[in-house]
Image: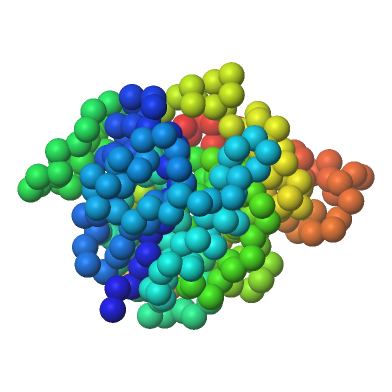
Length: 301
């Protein structure tokens, strides 16, 4: 039985560079092997042609918000409706994956019943179509070692979970900030094991600009991102990789990681638990902790 259904809602294929990196991403997913299947969601320009070319299932009838952006709730619902695998995985459309993705999913599924797997990523500039002939993985890893940069702890570009989880989601706008942070927050609040698989999964983000977004602005500054944050419950629900309570290391589930960044984040959460008014001395100290953490991340970038 196939273990995992990987689903994604790519951007339009109108921008040549975006089209290139999304084609690379889809090809890498198809190389994951028989334990996984791929579903593409949306009717963005060029997507139907790519799905047909690669022989991938396409689900075009996704619900959208007033700005025409696909809704995360609809994307997840569509993938669940047409798949029958025990595990589902949402992946952003510019992410390259290697077979360790499926291996990690299987390892966690064998040890846990209720979970969410996330991972930090590497950033790599890719300007051309990748050659997926024999040895492509080794070449990609060599390029990553030479040119790649680890991304600071933030949200996640991949989410792996049992099909029984995340059945009902707010109407977040895909491709905008906030919803990925909420996924981690909701999983923690629901008592799920939130597994940081950064040491087990190679997640490669192909760098790109934001010319596909209104006014070319980064998605953090868009009104839809602010709406995502409101739907998710505000800044208190903006969890990151630092908020995972489990790790996947050497194929085994272990306790949460500890570092200065993790300790800083735990102190912040202790000072500002859910429902705590964001004012007063606790809020002031929490803000200083957050600023310190951001400075450390920027210096290490």
